[in-house]
Image (cartoon, rainbow, N blue to C red; front, side):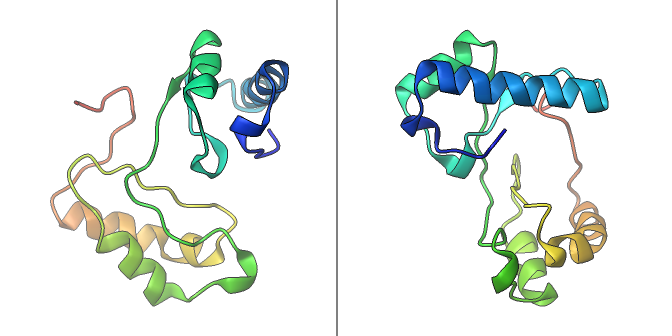
Length: 128
């Protein structure tokens, strides 16, 4: 809910952060969450065990880049290359919605990835 590093949190704080987000997502979008990506990619065996107890499966990304800092955007061409040069079978691409560069190139990148022969699937459809 507040993008806190999970290993720094107590069991009760983890539960509060996750369940408050769960409630907000359901209230706003009628979406029942079942996957979680630890904020900042920071986790431990303890935090994974805690989120598992809450019914979540932890999913990490395979493609990410330094797009989160709104004050240090590197331009659309940089965003395109970071995304398109790292696409691979089974890729889970992490993009931050606060990046104007990402929002500006997302349509282009989706079309290019499809032109490369890939398709987009939900985690539920993902074949391991």
